Structures are given as C-alpha cells and as structure tokens.
Image (tube, rainbow, N blue to C red; front, side):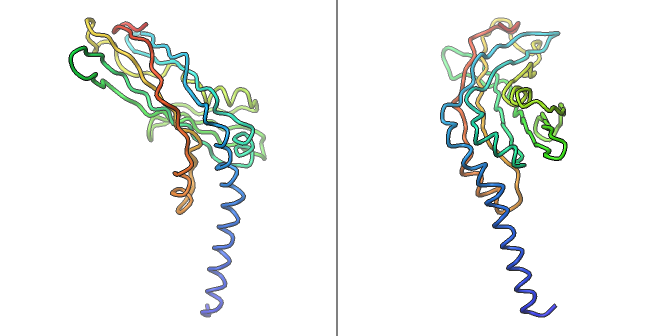
Length: 201
C-alpha cells in the first residue's frame, strides 16, 4: 500500500469512528440530562431458606432521551452497589458483605426485542428477552430478591442495615469512547434500609 493511500485509509477509518461516536454515543450522553432525581426506595430485606434477600426499586432512571438511546442500539447498564452493614454503637459500623449487580439491556431493532442480562461481576445470573418496554424497564430498575448474605453467619444479637446506590447509563464501547463516557455517568445517593436482625425485617 502506498504511503498516501495508507494515510487516506487511516483518515477514513478515523472519520467513520467519529461519525459512529456522534450517532451512537451522543444520545447516551444527553440521556442523562433529566436524571438528577434518581433514587432508590422501598428497600426490604427478608430471610428465605437461610439467605438474606434484598428488594428495592430505582426511581427516576428512565427519561425519554434514555429510551431513545436504547432504541438507537446503545447497550445501557445500571450498576447497583449493595452493601450489608453491621451497626455498632461505640465504634464505626462494619461492612459485612457487598455485591455489584449489573443490569444491562440491548435493543434488537431487527427482532424488536429487549435483551436483558443480570450479572454479578463477570458471573451471569440471568438472561431474558421481552418485546415489552414496560417489562424491560421493570427488569432494569428492580432489585428482586438479590442474595446479600447467609443468615447463619450473622450474629443474632446484632443489628444490621443495607445501603444501596445505582450508577446509571454506563455503556460499553471500545477505546477511546469508554474513557470519554466515564465522565457522564450518573449515580444516585446511597439509600438505607431500616435496621433488622439476622432474620431480616
């Protein structure tokens, strides 16, 4: 390949990458504009078969711009940081366990379906598909019985609480777009459950 031809080829690839950035990424960035009121509520912890399970709902996450970004093909991820804390009176509270739950959705325009993945780090927990936008948004915003700890390892004489926050609009792109997008991610404040015993609420 001649030097000038090689330069033209590289410039053409760069121009295509920039175009893709504006077509795919800019909708995702603007989708965070209306998400300042995001919060987690209705946190419940129950003991089922010896496991502490956490429930909660994320509110204020889905704006029309975010839905537009999803429908344009942007892979959108919500990350839920969940921590179980032991309350201690005389010294600082102690974190007993923590998890990072990733809720990810990808829209297939060809099949008109939403593909949802729930993972704990690199481990996939659940994958499902729906044509319903309402069902997809429920899957993305709900913590529906996520195990946080075995009840057997907790002290029956201690009190505990759970804190949760969500990080929104984390999208997966190759370099350099993954670094650029990191500056536009939104996150909620920490939300706290009521105190409970080793048996849950």
